[in-house]
Length: 126
Image: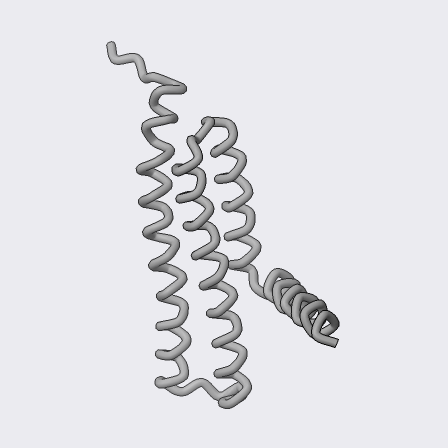
């Protein structure tokens, strides 16, 4: 009995992830960038710690995008199509959380990847 509930909860979570991927353009953008970043991680031979930091940043952005989508759906459920200033502010604040995660993840990415890229392709100064 408990095993079925556990399996059902994983199936429901997968359905939620599928919904976000099908209906949120930003999630597709984040997933595309995540794929590129992971590929670059292998290409540049990041060490374990650097790669784990990159994975945590990716997980943070994708998780916040999923939570943001759930929050927006919930707000829409309670307020329908009408958008008042408070509803707009709530949605903007939830989106800001994703934006902050993206900004700080980009900073971490530059910090990790830039030195490795500079070693891979050193610039010639004339």
